[in-house]
Length: 87
Image: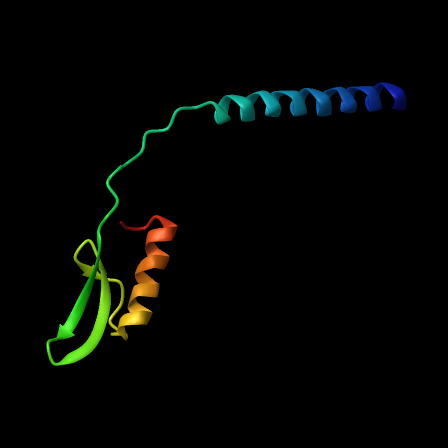
């Protein structure tokens, strides 16, 4: 009796594993639609003509409320470009 239960349990385990593999393979082949192919544009804004403070705007919205020096803001912008968050 124990052998029969063990064999049945093993059969169920193997059956569930093979069906999971088929499901994961079919899921991997599923086509996906991309929501948008246009990457937003990064722009560097200057605070005012008299001050050398800058910030990065993505699609016209500042990425945060802080202002930075020129070198630091360029590093922030390049970081966003490398991550693909903007152009």
